[in-house]
Image (tube, rainbow, N blue to C red; front, side, top):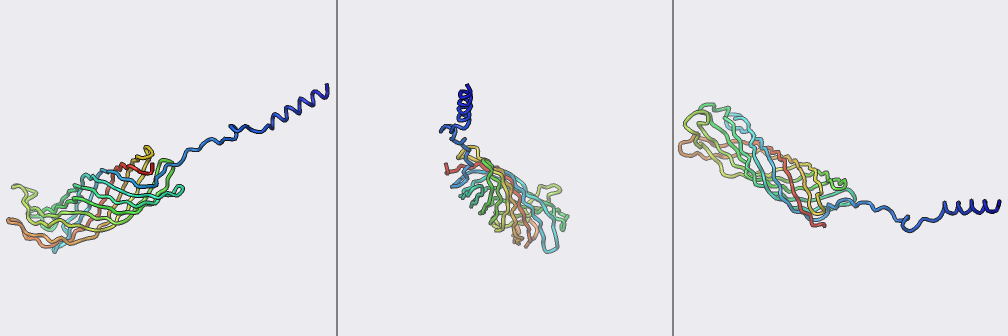
Length: 238
């Protein structure tokens, strides 16, 4: 009887330390991180504000913000190593940012300085950190804006305002800094929200006088642009 109990105990011990089966040794699969590497192309739309201050021969004429909508496209390429993502991107947008202010130097007959941003472009480098399907990134590089400036008179009283002086279209080159959050909806599609600030240099605009208008010559005009947009991208990484 004693031998029976010893054998039973020994068998139980062997069962407790029996080798695991092949199924038991199989590790639970871990979900792979989202793959941000490869070429992507997409469209974007949003809102912008361009802040301009005018300064003429007789001093400061005031400032205004030109605001409106934007829409365009972007194309880029990204490299991913572990959770870090590096990239290059080119973006071009149509814009309709308009604004004006009455001149503080010539309050009568209320000359109005007007500006419009018609388009902008960005060429930037990115660095980001990926947490599964989410990518947090910052970007910086070159920026260009397409602008038009003119001066109206008679804005504060009848008859309707008439064009007094105008410039041709003016292109400015400057710098850009931005940040964004992008989320992978599917392996190929992602959606991002992004903010960019454009640092544009002060430049002088030479105005031409139009028939019936006042006499204008040169104005130094500053410019900074703030942009916020929603970006939809398609990735070829698969």
